[in-house]
Image (tube, rainbow, N blue to C red; front, side, top):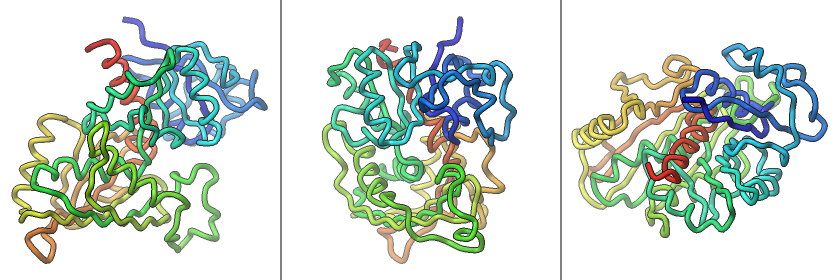
Length: 331
C-alpha cells in the first residue's frame, strides 16, 4: 500500500524537523510538501534549514521546494506553526477540505476541536462531527501536559482525584531555536514560562474529562526552564478522596501497559527517570518513576518524563493524525 502524502507547515523549526525525521520510515505517511513563511517560498528545504535533528536529512526531503502555507495540496497536514499564524492558516485549510493535525495552541480549547492523547481520550474524537468545515482540525496538548495526563490517567482508577500539585522542569528545546540566551540559562533555572501554567491547568482538566465537560479536580502548577537539551520532567503529588496505595497504583500501570504497549516505561530505581539516560531521539514513551506514598494514605507522588519534541509535539501530532484518519474512516 502506498504511503499517504503529508504536508508539514512550519517545517524549519525544531518540531517541524522532528516530524520530518519521524516520517522518514513511517509505515503509513510520507513527507510530500513543506511550507513556511513567504520569504522562503520557492527555495529548497536543504538550503534554508538549520538542521538540528539527530538523524541526517534525506536528500529527497532536502530537495523539496518550500510552498506557501495556503497552497499545499496534500489532504493530510501537520502544523508546527506559531499560534498566531495557525489561528489564520489552519481554519482556512480545514475549510478547503484538509485534515489538520496541529501542534499549535490556537484551537486546543475550542469546544468542537479534540484535544487528543489517543490512548487516553479517543472518545473526544466525536467532537470532529461538530465541525462545520469540509475538513477537520485536531490538536495535541502542551508538551508538559501530555506527560502529566498520561501519568495521571491510570491512577484515576484508584479513586476520586481531588487535587494534583505539579512542578515542571522543561528542556531548552521547548523554547525553540535559538531558544533561551546562554547567559540566562547556563548554571541557572528560570521559574517562569509565559502562559505555560494556565495551559497545563486547563488542558489537563479537558483531556481527563468527558468531551462535553472538563474534570473537576484542582490543579496547581509551577513551571521551570532548566539547562537540559531535550526532555520535560514533571513532579506531581496527587490527593484522593479515598485511601490509595502504591501496590494498587503499580497494578493500574501494569494493566495500562498491557492495553497500550509502548505508552509507558515504569522505573523502579530511585534515581530514574533521567532525560540524558532514558530518552532516545524518537521516544514516544512516558517514563514514570519515583512512585511513592505521600505523608498520608490519600496522597501519592510520582515523576513523569518524556521527550518534548516527540511525544510532546511531533510524535503526538503524527499519532493524532493516524487516530483521526481511523475515526473518520470508521475503523
